[in-house]
Image (tube, rainbow, N blue to C red):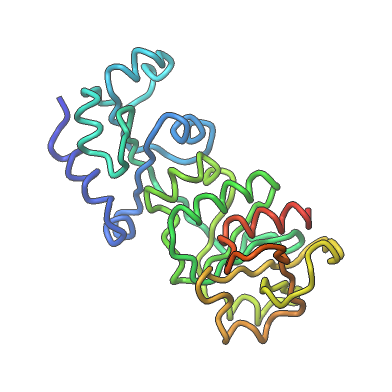
Length: 242
């Protein structure tokens, strides 16, 4: 029997303000949950379907496990078709002092789509980028769609939120901005360290941040598309620079 108090917790964490106040967030689906179990995140409790537990018997030894029907999981879930499990997890206390500026770092300015952020985290993980800096108006890391689309990579990539202007203005580190007018990435020398700054697909890098950019780089187009999805741009640029 799933206590009503647990149902209320899950429902509340679909809203950003409750995630902030409680320092908790949701992880949904087997893939993300398996990555979670390998990480140092602390799990508060997990709600799992009978079918999922039967097919993943190693979960039976987990603490604070509530077994329900797949229909109940689907009803509670914020995702379209999750019938496996929902886990309530404690956030990490991320401190920007722990950012390693001796390596390449991604910075995201005003990225609002949760699917894009999740995919960027996954791409960063693929290319072994350990830190992502986000402007405060970038979508919340702990949005369920961000967590889902990162496919577990959120457990290996640290995401920090701050005023990008403060960080780029206080650090003696090169900033590489992305723009359609920049140097073709194919002709750009690979840097050992620095901040690669990506803006939103609609606006690009905001005006007040441009003064911190040392060099501009771009993915030159050969066709007629008006713009390139920001997560696709991240993938191409990291492939060229790492």
